[in-house]
Length: 58
Ligand SMILES: [Zn+2]
Image (cartoon, rainbow, N blue to C red; front, side, top):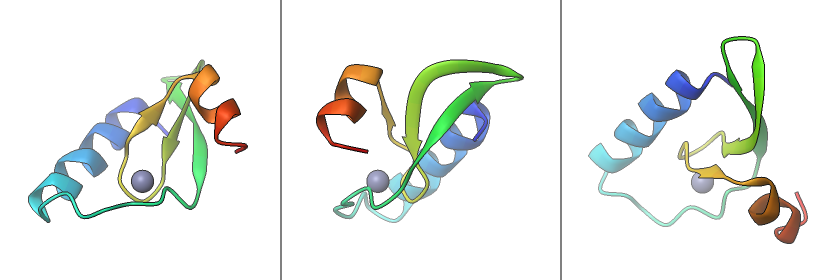
């Protein structure tokens, strides 16, 4: 997922009142064609650093 797309998801999620998200699915985050090493939640758009998503077992 593009970083810009993740930012949009985050805004939409906030607009819904930031309900609790269990981050069921994470996707690699890209800035244009570059892999940022982070992953983003496809539901709420929150981004996680490599250390974070490894710890989550994703
Ligand atoms: Zn989430």
